[in-house]
Length: 392
Image (tube, rainbow, N blue to C red; front, side, top):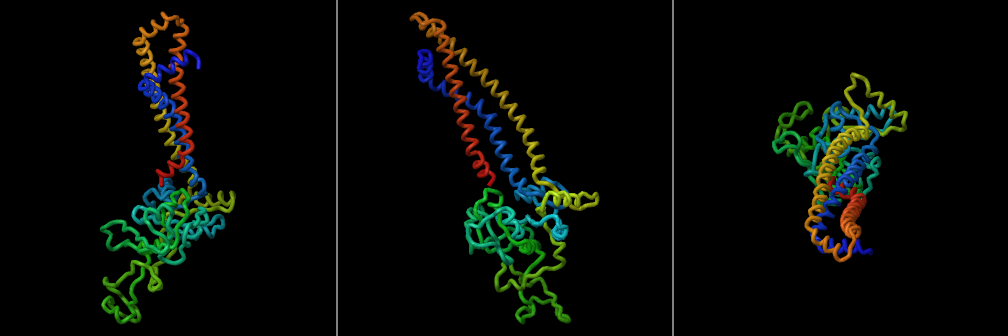
């Protein structure tokens, strides 16, 4: 280590508090805009990966963003529902395979996703334990949901009522856990999956109740006429589907008119995708078809616009901080005037003294930049994991 650099290093070590403050300031000045760009880029990647893996989404006309957030991330309020007939319509078109979704209910804070078995294959979800749901009342729990609810195959969870005052409509249904999914680091980890018909039972479109033809059920019968039985309000409805009562569960009305919140469309090829989108472009069409990737890119463009203002603000603070650091060095020189004169009197040239003072500034800047680079590497390495931990 050369003489000027050695003297500068010893000075900085002696005044370690001032040095630490200056180095930290430089580190933050460099790291904040760079680290913010890294985090935003990784966040955008995490958000768009799921959207890009979903080709098309069909739902009732309304907010496309709400439709995407509810169907892909289970984060938004339930959008306007469409009917199951849209699933049949898409299947009959021959352009895509439909995967219906009905996302409305919760077990505590975990969304219940009513869908079909094709959803697991589409998302590439694997089982860590148990099996997939096979009959009414069964559910498969995501990895994080199983951990937070402390459930495993053989246990049960109960759906939450939408409102404590909803006494006549949606009521809790006890669901049997038959499988737990392996961690996928996606919103599926927090979800609970059930069959679409089970979701309709929670909604109240289907139900099971005591057998009114038996003699013990007379108290629940209002009238019997020509083989037609009219029940009164005291009839017992089951809030759990078991092997003993599963045959009593039935639906009223046309299943094609039952609600779904969205339909994932998986086109067979690019031509099929274009033709399917054309089917929903008519002015009188009551449904909308969206590309989730395009919707999320529009959202991210807004976020990036906000980011540019944040970066500009950070740069303004950086300029102020650098000016403050420069002032600290200038004031330090004034306070060290006697020290500088002593170095000159003992034989140090003005050039050597200037080299010592310059070395101090260079060392502080170098340490700050090196630490900022290290933080940036850590951010780029572990940023995605931290983002997933925050989102899930």
